[in-house]
Amino acid sequence: MKRAGLLILAFILAQIGQAANTSEEGIGAMGTSEAQEGASAAALAQLRGLAGEWEGSFEWTGARTATGRISATYSETGNGSAVVENLAVDGVPSMMSVYHLDSGDLRMTHYCAAQNQPRLKARQIDIAKGILDFEFLDATNLSSPDAPHVYGLEMRLLNADHITLDFLFEGGGKASKEFIDLKRVGHKFSTP
Image 1 (cartoon, rainbow, N blue to C red):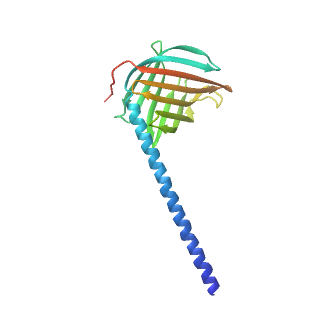
Image 2 (tube, rainbow, N blue to C red; image 1 turned 90 degrees about the vertical axis):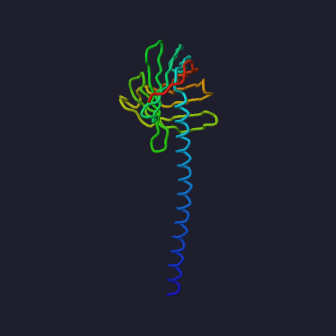
């Protein structure tokens, strides 16, 4: 009987210890989640600071090659809950991206010239270094997994008036990269 009591006591103590470990993991996970949420909010605030007009150049490398001039406008929408990036080549709108928060994550939906809409999530945010790297989640209007589409974005906020974008593109088993270098030319503005 004593032995059974000791086994039950040992079992209870083990359960209490496991609950304590789970609780500590929950606190650590909550801290990580809160840190991610804070970094995402800070990144969106930094993106809001891009509001205005930009000009620069683009260069395709890899399976596709081309160079040229590009312009961009950044503006806020949704009462400041999202930032819209419009890119135009030779004055013709070519693609648009919308950056926003979703449950503490920084997300981006890219309305591509390939006529699909990849959705990406920030996998790395380093505010001090101006690094925002996004990875592919899924896409709408993607005819097949092998259809041409953006699968990543590496954004570098070099300073308040200079940014670069590296769109990572794949399709048909071939990869390309579109590097865009932009400098601010217009005044900052925001949309109410």
